[in-house]
Picture 1 (cartoon, rainbow, N blue to C red):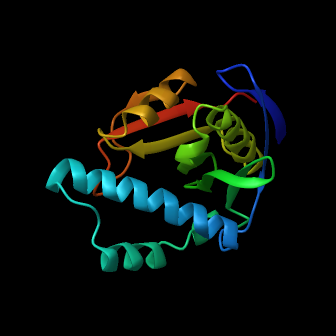
Picture 2: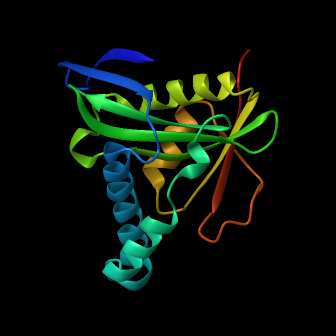
Amino acid sequence: MAGMTRSPSGTRDSWSVAPEPFDSPDAGALWRAYYTEVSDRWYQVHEGRTTDPGELEREIAARTGAEFAPPTGVLLVARHDGEPGGTAGVRMLDATTGELSRVFVRADLRGKGAAPLLLAAAEAAARGLGARRLVLDTRSDLVEARALYARHGYEETAAHNDEEYAEHWFRKELAG
């Protein structure tokens, strides 16, 4: 699941993607960065403020990522030149359906090819867990995420869950 990719500017960027324990220090730091960004973005759009620090700490602590532990889940960490730069998690919802979550690339590393590598690695990991399809949900304000999923063959569908902040649902059938 490692790869070398070229950034849009044409320079070579070295990325590797591998499973990592959900509770590792690097996974924890990336989870904090991800949650801070998406939470702040939601509050800025809807309430004109950033996330309350106490709420941020409670939510980060409450959502440990244990659902990404084997044998029914996996958390992938992308590293850019050895430094943690992004994540993608898969957890099985049933014997043939996996859920893609926590797809994130640090802001300073976006545009360097990590997202497609993470998606490909997550799809391969999902197939390894027995998934024949992946589903995911996202929000309206996360337009970049929605565009990424559409570019990589995910089709918008009807709701498959009742998550509080979910506004768009996607699905992709995985090739054998």
